[in-house]
View 1: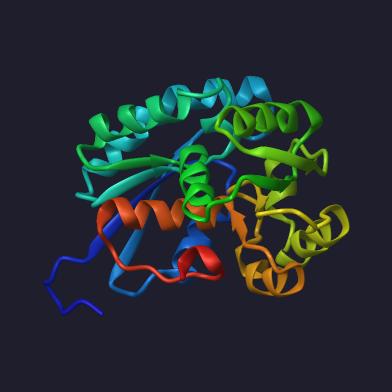
View 2: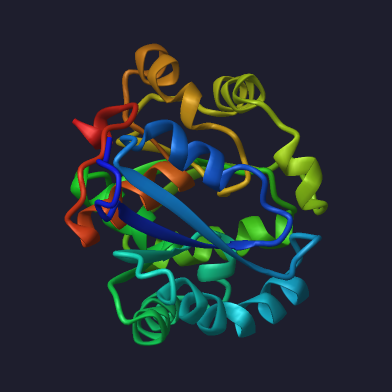
Length: 237
């Protein structure tokens, strides 16, 4: 823990206004010496139109986090950072880095980096989303070079309903929807889906790495900032 008067390390999260999970999961796995600071963009329903409108506020949110002298920022929304296909995630990272004056990551790109670090090629995807967002996610992942063996969504639009799901819900969905045979990894999508706490048990049961949106973003953000982090699952080993 930092001594009185000593500057703590700081990370910034740009999150949808209705997200109740990202800050909570980040705080769980970070050392006390690193503080978490959030800035919010308006979003209530996880739909294409609302996600598209939300990204307009990303740079301003990152700029405000820069006022807090954070070490790095993350755009912590999966579908919001892949909505416009390959390249949009990298563009978001550049916009946020310019606005905040520090390194920036976007969840969709962080997921790609995490899966690449695990040498994953064939993956299964589990989401809380509607079918139209599942289709966009599959297109993005396949364009990034991954073979999507299956994708399973819950059909939820209200982000508060997604945030009300538990790690047990995530574990149950993965176990029911995923056949681990011939898979290199499983990806549980959505920064508002409480799934990071289920990773260790799922990896033990499936015998393949399990990556979540918040897990990938946390791993990538701390890597970009040069900060220590530990977390569940193969990705953090």
